[in-house]
Length: 130
Image 1 (cartoon, rainbow, N blue to C red):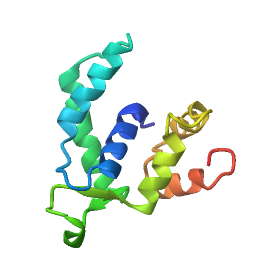
Image 2: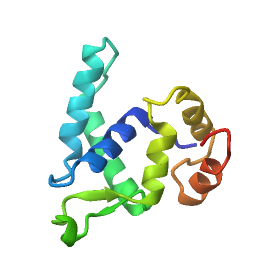
Image 3: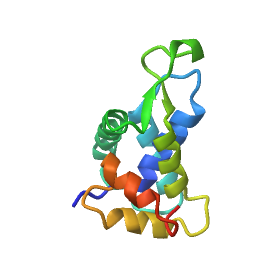
Image 4: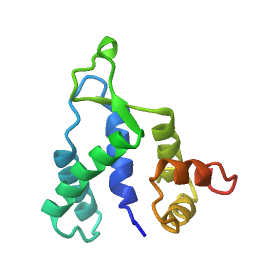
């Protein structure tokens, strides 16, 4: 069973969503994420491992179609991304600003691999998670 750091994935998806003219840099985003958690008094753990995980998530999100290279006509340079429709749906499912966000994350964690495209499609279509 694959478990994911949904907070980190949410952070990365928000960076993609808001990063129109910027290169996507997962390692610094992970460092900022760790600093924000530390400021809230939450345990951070190994920051280098978190940076590595962020880089792995970038590849996973790209390979599985949650993000895509930003088109050149929209300022794409090969190092920045856009959310795909599936990526937008993932962000809406795990978004911590939505009340009750813990339940969808729990449902995702119960899957063998929640970010497998077919699994996510099936699970995200359920009314109680969407």
